[in-house]
Image (cartoon, rainbow over all chains, first blue to last red; front, side, top):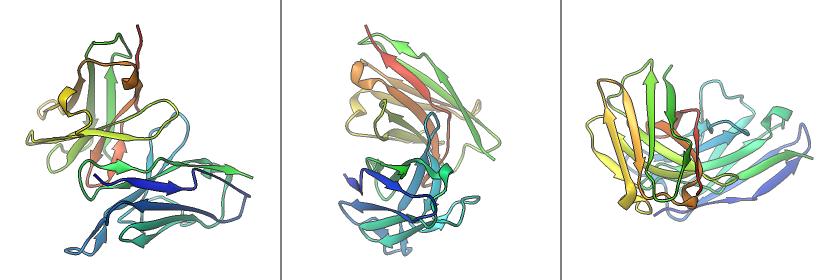
Length: 113
Length: 115
């Protein structure tokens, strides 16, 4: 089974500043056959289901603001929010869809400093 | 745009069977995988299992002995049954389409197991 580990567990950033969340998988989630990383990022606000932000590690879902970006390959990935807005306060999860059982990171709680 | 709606009993006693249903609109059932995911209060997300429209299933080994996921393609219904529940099964349960990431999600159903 692939274990996903995020860091940090919580993060406080000032409005307008950059927020960076890291995600590491216990084994590669990169498929050589199609040159894709099977990694997604989700945002979850209280009382709501998770919302997909990023798939294939770096492709923004339709409608997601361009201040959100994803990077990385293989086992190490990063979600970056370039300029934090108040509405970005949430818990963020990475998730691998490379192999079953599909697993999530433990979550990173993002707050305003 | 595909929309998922789910429902089911929210309060169970230990040893009972959890039963949830999810239906979707504005889309086709075929070609994708349909999953159940749960989230204990204040905790992270756990994939429970999934089914393809053909009926083939894949379950999380940690829950496999207690799970049944089924589909009624004519009614566009997805169902989850989890037997012999305990307090550790208290969680918000979500249905979601996997293609191969999870999107969209149902609104979630809080299931509490308490004597």
